[in-house]
Length: 281
Image (cartoon, rainbow, N blue to C red; front, top):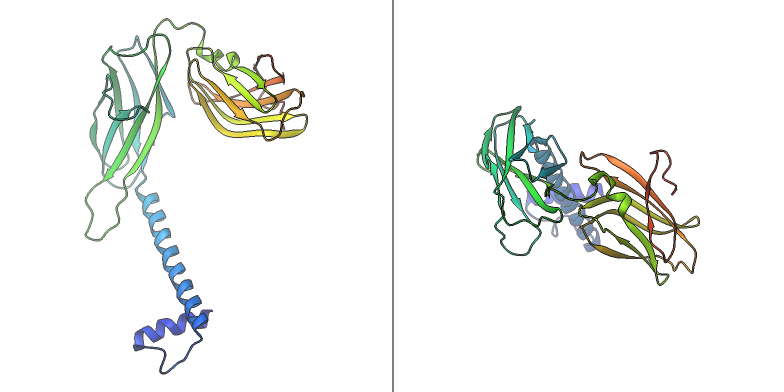
């Protein structure tokens, strides 16, 4: 194959192949495909290296909690790259279409030299938000590289994290939200999880077993306040109880393991467990 590739490259330089160096059509096609694959791989590598060189922004948090009684909340951004960038930040919701949010980010645009830090503030206007439960939004932070030489590759990198707006006077503690989740089996082939509380619950590494058999796995899941989800099982439970292990993400981005056992048709709550013992393996 290497000789065919070399031949085609040489032939392209000499202006033709069919009259002086006959090659089997299949070998020619394979060589062209291989040469194209090499060019594509090199281009992909160039994109990766360019992204690595320019992806310089680092946020000092993985989520933002906004208590309604606070006038503002802030977080930091570090430009760890080797060049100056323009930093753009904005909030958006999951709602369809354009939604006017009662928040403002200051500064929405900021010029950041290499290896500099910038404090961004989120301010709430005090209107148009549910007061009986949390609301969630997406915070977007995007770096825009400065103008480069002609034909140079530029990539704008965007990071997104969640902002949880927390009204005053909500009952219960947010740290207990995962323990309040209710797990039950429906009709033997679905696992239902319900969130009766006012807080969002973010989970990762959800693992469900019937005895020693895995019947459900999910990498991540977020339950909104008052939301219920039905998760299909890989095989019917047939009256056998299920055990669930999952990891919850707390306000500080920390990972806290939980376990719910002997789940059947009656609702069961989870309990916090030691990190070395999730009860599900």
